[in-house]
Image (cartoon, rainbow, N blue to C red; front, side, top):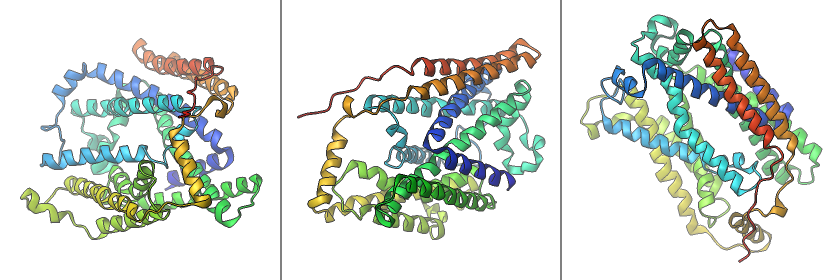
Length: 435
């Protein structure tokens, strides 16, 4: 409880006091730190076990599906639905802010490509240490008895604590804390901006000055942060599901109803103005039904089974919830096209301008001037961080242990050098479409 409240207050303070630049800067630094640690630790874990082939051959599971699951259909259904969920979550109007901070479309495509590469290789390298721990036959419940059945969640910590040099566990925990804080500060900052622009400025006070909007944005950030802390405390009190299962259920029940209309709104503009809010209402109704009415035992005849295991029940509930949202929530949004009518006047001009903006690349004259100090500040900070991490090597007792810190520090240092050297490079831009 203390950790949840402490981290929540810290996140709220950063988002409210620093603003969007501080949030973006911390995101960049935590990304570099986490990628460097993930890739380095994953590589050393593979070397420890003798390579990928040795890891696969020594893995203790009788099936690639893992334990507590008997039906391959449930496993692959869950895999496919998780891929669809992440695709919807990462590619919608609510998540596009990460691409709007770039200079032009070409830079946005580079950011998307880099994110796509990390989506493929990052999770694999992150899970290598737990896989190595499992391959070594470690009894995690014996080492972490207080965690009971959730002891498997400590597999990564066990590997770091027992097979990597002293000090590495603290560095990993710092990176994990940074990775936890970064998206939370981003969400608070984004939500405050949505409230100010779409509620306060549009409805409550259309003539508000920028100073007034800034103040209201900070107040909205604090209120949103406190609500998030209360929600986190509520989730922590749930004992029936693991933390991973809670996050999957949260994404399926609450995030997906918001993400689906945000994604489809970029696919078709020929929907009435009320389609977005109505789709969210339908999505919440679907979530309510799937959580409080739907019973996974209804699916037992499909598998000719008498009961499901705990894992199978959770996986089926998450998967069926996502399917219901894609079919019902997404289908409702598409069906609202039947009520679309061409608009005129000021609203018609806004929609026409939106269509033009979506189809027209940003011209060089429209690009905002790049503040080179950002690259200089972030580059220097990353260089300092890289040197500090690499300097931990002098406290180790062997060359192999020193190589762990040196490799991580060197990766951070090179990233910082690249940021600093690229600060004055003006990105090329495409000319606008004129035909």
